[in-house]
Image (cartoon, rainbow, N blue to C red; front, side, top):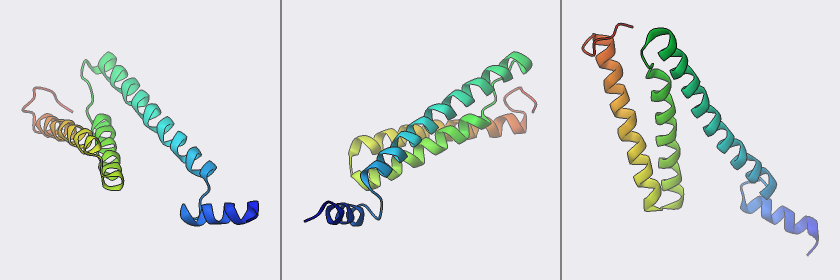
Length: 112
């Protein structure tokens, strides 16, 4: 078997992508997670400085994204740990949604 045949078989096994492409996507996803965490932190700090309130909207998106990502990992890997992490993120997501609704209705003491 030639090198090209082996690479072709590897791409077929990985849905048309080679190992390098999969590794690059993995690194990109990790960087995206951490950069979105940093952006949420910066937005929250600025919101606190200027309004004395922490905006929950960006955290809703962040934890919603994480819960979906870990649910997908659970479905693909069938590891119970991934399900527990996804459920934890989902609980935080739901609590943030409830907080946001309370803020919108004025029941939390803040006005948007």
